Image (cartoon, rainbow, N blue to C red; front, side, top):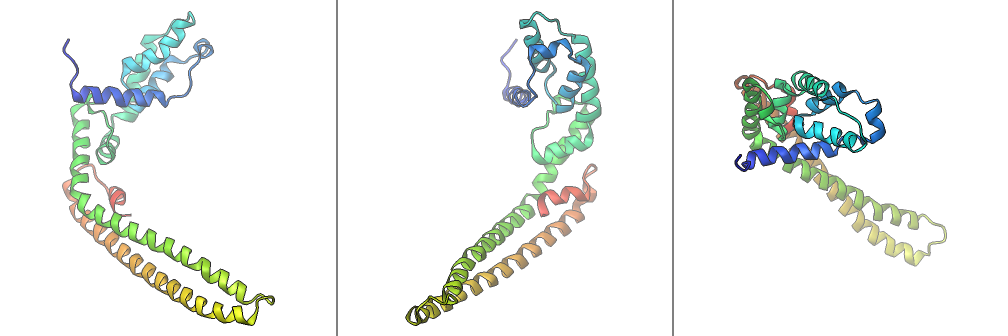
Length: 226
């Protein structure tokens, strides 16, 4: 056999990482293992059947227990067909990445590639929303930061033990701090308004192109426009 290409290697890596995330399987579990259910979970997660089975079977073999490969494979196929190889899962995989098209029928792969196309179509509007959201986030942080010296100075000013001389200094410091806070509030409102505007534009654009995508729905727009 030839060496696996990049696509095959990537698929194997993804499957291996998915298996590492599985629940811990111990030799004691071999006594009560439901091999069909283990297979179902592996199929539903889109793991490679051989890697998934070997992961459990090797634990049992080391402890002197036999694995039920037929039950595992039957459960795997059910999990794959019912939960993993669906057009919704494939389309979502195209939006987010990490879907193993080689495990599924051709029409399922079509949904995945449509998801990739939809993601490319929405990349520009989605990026503008992300930039606007990031500006709004930093503006909110600036408001929180600007509030602290205002609260501290007001508290010190209202303290009966604060001297008159210090209160005069506080008045100037407080006026400066309040101007900074006011500017931060104004920037927060501007960035919020711009973020809302970009989000609406993104949604309107997304809704206009939905008819071109068989497996897309309005909820897919939320991935880019929220």
